[in-house]
Length: 89
Image 1 (tube, rainbow, N blue to C red):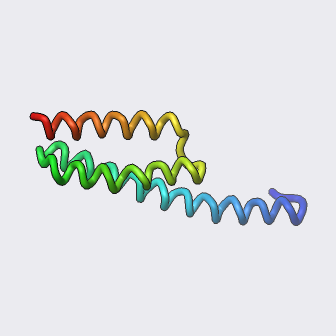
Image 2: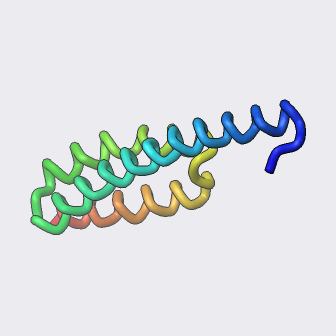
């Protein structure tokens, strides 16, 4: 339990930030799932469009401190690799 007014304020602030971060992570996951589903369906144009929409969202998550930069870079790289393989096939 918080003993000082500042500790109480930090608890309130942390709760607000947790809600915002949770929404941001959920939004990013939705974009990634759209990209993965279009890759799985074998639609190269839709996969490229979904990847183009997912990339800035994922990098925004990095900028906001929700994800680590290397994690997002790795995920984008893997998605791009799969999307490109779909276009060449």
